[in-house]
Image (cartoon, rainbow, N blue to C red):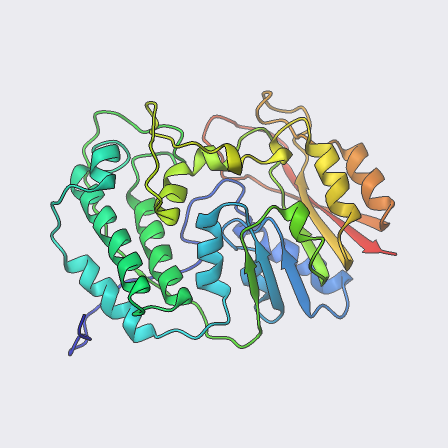
Length: 344
C-alpha cells in the first residue's frame, strides 16, 4: 500500500479508551502515590495480571515486565510498551486506508457474528481488516509491534461500537446498529528500556523473572475474563475457531483462571512463594461476602495476610472506589485495598 501523499485528519486513542472489568485507570493516582511514598529504588516494575495495561502506563519511567493470560491483552501491552521501534506514518497510512474501505464480503466474522454484537457490514470490515493485518505481517510489511498496534486499534474500535454493556456474555437483540467501525491511531511512545511483555500463566512466569516491585491484580471473583471478552480474544488470536451458543463463544477451557475458582487461595500462596522482588503490591477489594456468590472475593483477608506476612512485613492502604462492572451489582462501601509487602 502506498503512503498517503497529503495530510488527512485522523482520530487518536489512548490506553484507557477501552471498557474492561476491574480496570484500575481511575485508581492510578492512589497506586502511584503508595509506590512513590513507600518504595525505594524501583527500576523494574512487573505487572503480572496486567489486563489492558492501565497501571503499567503509570510507570513508563521504569523498565516494565507485563503479563496477561489473555492474548488480546498481551497484544495491547505489546503495542503500548514494547521496546521495538515502529513507524507512526505506516500505522497512520494503514488506518486511513482501512477506514476508507467499503467491504461487503463474506468472511469468518460475517458467518459467525453478523447482527449480533456488530452489524453484518461491520463484521465484514472487521474480518477483512484482521486478515489483512496478518497477511501484511507475514509478508514482512509490519514488524511485531506494528502488527500489535494495528490489532490494538481494531480491538479498541470494536469496543466503541459493540452492542454490549462492555463485555461479551450477551448482546442486545433487535437494536439498530447506528455506530460503525472507525479505527483510531494508538499513540504509544518509542522507548529503549528493554521492556518485556508476556502471555503466560502468572504462577509459572514468576519462577523465571525478577523485579524490584511486582504488582498483582488477580481476578477477585468467579467471573472469568475469557468469558467476558471471548470475542475480543477471538479476533486478536485470529485462529477462527468454531463458536456456539447464543453468545457465540469458542472453547475457552485453556484460558480459565484458578483465581476465579475454589483453587484461588492455593494459587495465591504458590504465586507469592515464588516471587523474587523487594516489594509485592497486591490490589484486592473488600467485597468479601457483600454481593452475590459470583461477586464475592475468592481469597479471604486472613489468607492474604498470612501468606504475605510469611514473605515480609505488610502495610495496607485503602481508597473508596466504584469499579466498572457488568451492571448487575450496586455495592455500597466498596474499597480497593493495596497490600504492600516489603519482602525479607
